[in-house]
Image (cartoon, rainbow, N blue to C red; front, side, top):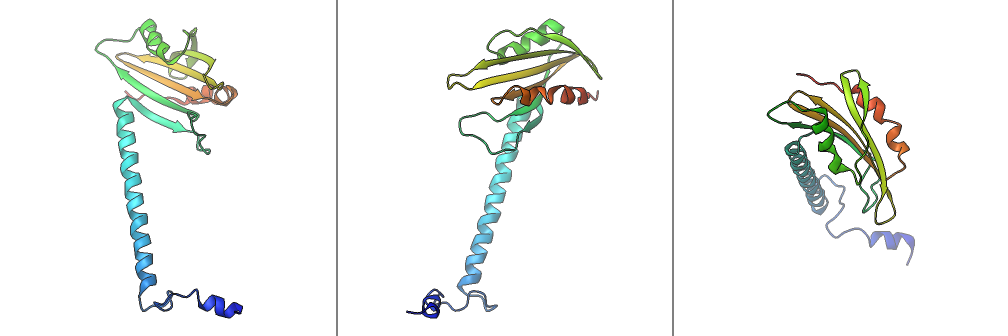
Amino acid sequence: MGKADLMSGMVGSGGDSGSASGGEGDAAMNAIHDMANQMDADSKKEEAAALAKLKEEGIIIHCVNSSKPIPGEKPTQFYVKKQSQGGNWSWEDAEKSEFGQYKTKPKATKVTLPIGQASRMQDTWQLVDGANYSVISYVIPNGKDLYTIRFITEEPIETLTAIDKQVAESFRINN
């Protein structure tokens, strides 16, 4: 069997799939197109649901490292969370609200940002699987609202310390 005979055996019985006359090739392309559109629509629905869930949690900005995810590892990310209460936030209450994000109670240090004072906390601890888990937080009380900028990584802490100050300094509150 020659090369030409092998290639001719690969052509479908419905004729040339590239022809303008329709046939099986067009039907297959339409099915693929419909499937791609459905996958896109499903993806948009999933994204809308995820964004709605974040909004319910008070997360108003969420940025995730776009590198290939590692199964079982939380991606490097930062987000801004807004919490509101009936009265004004005190510094003590603002800092206490963040302690649950840490394995230990980190020492808060006051920092000056372009928008005013903030408390910065940082800690790293080892997870059961041996990976290091690092969190850096800035809490910014603003009357009845508390804004928290939280950075999380399982990569070296320098991944966060290289950006956290610049991100926090870029934060603005519109009243």
